[in-house]
Length: 232
Image: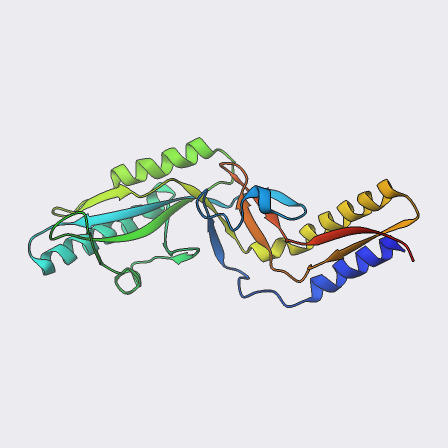
């Protein structure tokens, strides 16, 4: 009975509407944890992230405002032009990122005043490289080498901003395997308590969440509630 209840709940959850994150690419860093590991309810699945990512800032401090803007944008243009040659992709956004291209960068990037530098502005974007081989050090070296090789125009400066992280594409596609892991966990829990007890699993309609598990892996989970209760 307990097995039927758990599997039925999981089957219903697969059919529930998903949040509007399907096909989105999500950035995961140590500082962007949706919840710390101690607050994660239940279990999830670990998988290798799709990309290593690094946020990059381009500064410009030319005295003339128009010249400053041109130097910054021309530097970004140069970065975009060498991306494919070095196995690096360019993106923009915060939690959810999208491709930055020669066609859209002037519209998508916002010049911001730099509070720490007089007569200066900056734009920020991300660079990323595939983690298909799982080698975090090689990926980070690739990103750092790209920053060093980025062309500078005029007084523009290109720098890494913050610590590297990872990204995962379409985390909602892993909802099924996560539910299977929850069902297996519930099945094992029920067996531990014997035939006089049943397992109840709730809150499976919650969205898929994620947390950085290692330099190259993310933990994907659904925060759910599992109870072992006496059978009626």
